Image 1 (cartoon, rainbow, N blue to C red):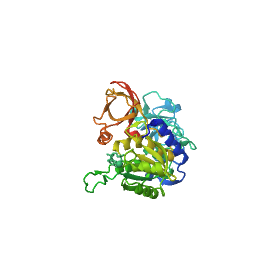
Image 2: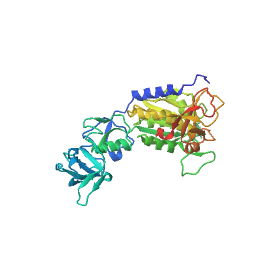
Image 3: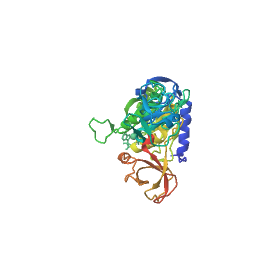
Image 4: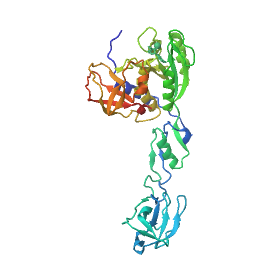
Length: 401
Ligand code: AMP
Ligand code: MG
């Protein structure tokens, strides 16, 4: 067996992103704000409105012109609620005003109701020093009509969709969904709900990845479970490549006899990478079958999780036009000693306790439960040892969705 050096994680990522840049999704479609969550903007969102569209009050209180202050107490000449169009302020008077209500023309200051005295005859005395512009939200303070609010390539979450709503936009222009054919390989696999056979286990990867793919805006084409047979594997890949932007598989990419997915890819397709300096996830295999990209994740659920999160996810975002595909990470203190250096970069399931990363006790790549216990992945660089309290990079799981 070849002892070629393992590919560093950064290099694998560069290759995947280069592959994504070569085959970006170009088609786009319009969707209502309700249906656009998790999708990627296909063209810039340009403001058609100043926001706020007119100066308005930031407080419940009284609007006045400061030039009239020497004439106080001031009579209240109108009441302006949010949703009303006010009259111009009568000289020598003030206006009762409520939060979000347009400022009457002629007013240049709002005083909050707590700082005024309302006399028995209804006139108002201002008790505190006042400044021009106080408690007024200026027209266009958030944005001006014509401003680019969101750039093409922005992922749309609640904040972005609310910004679009604030402009009165009901439909947004988004990149079409990547169509991902999802395939679970392994003779041992049985779908939940069916009886287990001797030696079989339930397929957990399909559920893990189908949900995760949808979170990333993908349409999932379920390719089911594939037995470990080269001929069937070839046939299945031929079927799945039709209409798919990506074939995503789990299992069958190590170097064992039954690992025929990787073998078929290497024999029939164009392998791009295989054997990474990553733990878990070393056998991650990337290539093409025909013209369709294939990402072959290792079968162990945590290997699939780590390689999908760190490598397949950036690929899937990039083909949708997202520029910044890397998860935010930050430095935490090691809540453990790491005495044995490894030749592969290791990602451990860890929880943050008082700013330190504490490890899930069982870091086996076959153990999925640790991911539900953990807050994210703590990264151990290649060939390094660490002692309690040393800084390490931490990637929160919620950054991977
Ligand atoms: P493989 O990468 O095919 O050698 O599989 C590695 C390990 O992951 C084996 O113990 C498999 O039984 C297990 N495995 C493979 N696919 C799945 C799956 N879809 N769900 C749960 N475990 C799996
Ligand atoms: Mg297998």
